[in-house]
Amino acid sequence: MSKVKYYFDAETLSYRPIKATNINRVINFLLFVLSSFSFGLICLLILLNSDILNTPSEIAQKRTIQNYELQFDILNKKLSQLESVVANVEERDNNLYRVYFEASPIPEEQRYAGFGGVNRYKDLEGYDNSELIINTTKRLDILTKQTVVQSRSLDEIERLAANKSELIAAIPTIQPIKNKDLTRVASGFGYRIDPFTKKRRFHYGMDFTAKRGTPVYATGNGIVKRADNRSSGYGRHIRIDHGFGYVSLYAHLTKYNVRRGQKVKRGDIIGYVGNTGRSAGPHLHYEILKDKKKINPLNFYYGNLSPKEFEALLSQSKQENQSLD
Image (cartoon, rainbow, N blue to C red; front, side, top):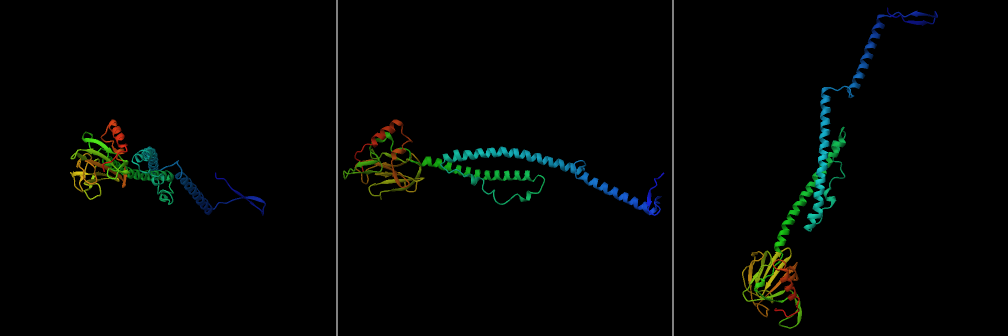
């Protein structure tokens, strides 16, 4: 039995039963349906936007995102290892390789240049994992730049290493006449008595006395720049350009064994001892120039002399005697 509803009648001061019409019943039913639908829709939206209810597609997407997050985490760990390796190579590059080859270290600003100012990661903003993606991308960019800079540096080191071996082969490091062929070292680098004027003057080379025709050897790799007698006082002489600013000169020769423009190697016979030019007897006058400045050849005889032979040569060269030219 349905419940009867009443209303208060102010005129009769009594409660009177409410008579339900068909229209009221329809309106009440529609209101109930509408409120039920609204309530259900709200509940559905809440469920769809929560983790309580997920569609198969959302579950698959969630798993994919979790997998990406895991991959990014693994990638960042690998990046940390690579950054450590690159940092170690950079340290050795600056403090070992470039020091050994006398090259300036690469400043840190150059290794990390180009990562300030403009926001190059703006397109990656606004996503749920934007911070993770931007951080990883930035680390990859920095690591790529470091690798490129380091690669160029190692290319430079390789070129320097090649030049270093060329330099070692080019520096005039042996005695131009073998000890077994020497009569004596007549004069060294420094002030000596001129054999013609008998006055004290500076002697810019070393005089090696030997028999006429004794072989004279190139003291380092290079190119013959002169082989003539058109230089005052030197007579027949040879000049070898060794590169790197080094030039060696061999004077008072009796004849040549090379010609201008010829490439020679350390130990090649380039001429023979003579007595041409301003000379007081058969001997070889030998000079070394570095960057056009004449320097003491004695400092370069470490290629073919024993310590005992070098001491003897040093003792003889220091004597302030009469030179032969």
